[in-house]
Length: 434
DNA sequence: TCTGGGGTCCTAGGACCC
DNA sequence: TCTGGGGTCCTAGGACCC
Image (cartoon, helix red, strand yellow):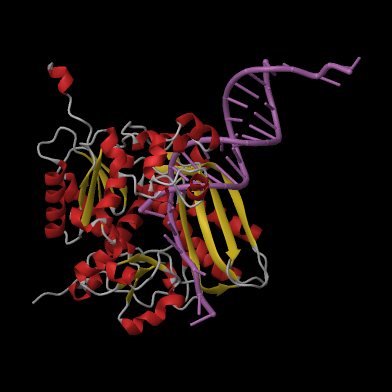
């Protein structure tokens, strides 16, 4: 056998945290171990993470809190989401996993792909070491799926989660085609990455019921009847890479900040406060990725769930030039808000979306930009950077734009009745030892 | 009383141009 | 009666993801 024929087979791992948000809460409150725990979305609206014990109580993903709160009597513990904590735990977990391979793609807050191609050891050995190290160093239980493509790695991860005998690691990378089809022949097609709620019933109706069925399906037919995306998924299921690898997270092309209100809001002034806060948050994210935006979209809507007068509208406000200045974005957002606001409606939600986002032009501020004193703009940029730094250090409420100032009991603020302390991210909440 | 927030990609169709 | 065709750009909407 020639040396060039000995290229190692592709081996991609997908590692993710089990019930990640719940696991983060358990790290800080070990007394929650073994108990049914859920994490609630913003406004304590619905369950967005469940431990195995909570799933065993029959709580589905997305269950509205009001419909399951009676389970507290049976020991269910509900915790308001604390995304600062989860982001912090995610950073730690990703750093530990990244030690195992130079090629890591962070896919979401709780999962990443890792290229294991050519590394010494079997998939099971490497996967087991990753699980042990993350559990010991970060405290988060994980599962590891390994396959020749991203889609197969996701599928393997799904198997690792659902089959206890695999002990959290499933390696599909060594199988030949027949073995692969055998391994995935019981996986419902709806569990395949890229097949969602709309596609699954349609596929089932045409006889494609399992992952193996999809792998065997005619590619041209898939493309013709559905989409190129689904045809790619089918290729990936056969071990042919069709989805690329992204080492660095690409900058966002749109940036949103949006919230449902704690209680319905009728008052324009309160909407202005909310939209001001959302805009300054979005602007902060924009500056973090060193981008400018040239379109601001703002929307308001009444509740989807309540009967009564309904109103939803959005305004798209183009800017003269791309910018990352909160004050400029704010002016546009508030103008947009006033153009869509109608008195007499119980608004339940508002949002701000920055569009046409592109990298900030390199180099110093040009003299003619903004038609303003360039020195003023430079100083203003510096002030913006200082605000971002202070907010990062001392919590995001430290410095706010004046128009976002509000009463501590403003109606639009989120409900968070079950919040746990932010041990790792807020000075005031740091655990005191000794 | 009470139902999250933040993204991506693809496609179809219209406007416009030559 | 005949009344093109191809290309690009943009937008809205639908599907998916976590």
